[in-house]
Image (tube, rainbow, N blue to C red; front, side):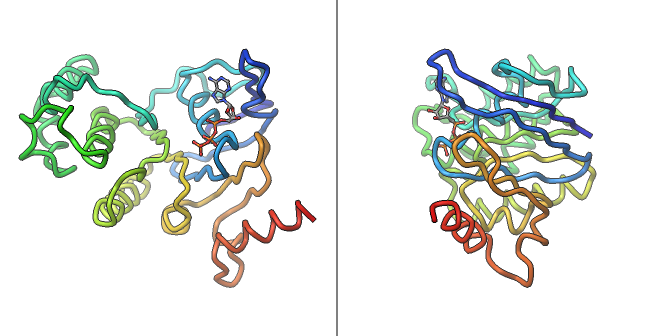
Amino acid sequence: MIQVQSLSKTYKSGKAGLHPFDHQIPQGTALALTGGNGAGKSTLIKLLATIIKPSSGTITPGGRSFSYMPDDLEFPLQLTAIEALGMLGVLKKVDGKRSLQLLKEVGLYDARHQKIGTFSKGMKQRLSFAQAMLSDDDILILDEPTNGLDPYWIKWLKTYLKKERQEGKTIIFSTHDLSLVEDLADEMLFFYEGKVLIRGRVGELRGNGERLEDVIVKRLEELNG
Ligand SMILES: Nc1ncnc2c1ncn2[C@@H]1O[C@H](COP(=O)(O)OP(=O)(O)OP(=O)(O)O)[C@@H](O)[C@H]1O
């Protein structure tokens, strides 16, 4: 169980990325973070991944190990895919075979000797996912993992993550893709201006099959009168 207590982030500019916020994430569940642009999803992801420090509050247990996929990972463009993943593998003390296996899984094996600078957005995104999966951690923290992926690879990613969750991993991901939330998440948080506007189990939020899109629009309309 990950416990988030009174967690908030105000940036140096004075902008509140996240207002004080409490939540519990049970082991083996998938939590989706949704919300409009600038709502606070990446802020929370970065706090969970300890990339940034909170202005208040705690996340326990501390010192968790996790696999992290940022939304903007910039690989050195002059490296090939296998060089980049291999180096990260050395840093993470992972067997070289794991890098090759992951490159196969994300469909980049044939492009492994190609420079990352020549990769398309979707290829870079798949490489970013592969680097996150190098270590076999129990917690996956993924910032917009389907961003830039085509429908084939979105489906592939859903299947991969469902399997990870079935194996007991905790998955925390941000997304604008509500079908991914419907298919994968146990629980959803919808952020609005740094605050949680909608929180609940996906099945319950959808009641008798309502689409999440409609649930969210209804709530936003209520808010805006
Ligand atoms: N480094 C920063 N310095 C100042 N303000 C920031 C910084 N990072 C984010 N913010 C602000 O914090 C708020 C939340 O941003 P965040 O990146 O968490 O949004 P998001 O929900 O991930 O948005 P998107 O869907 O566009 O990725 C925004 O108003 C943003 O401008």
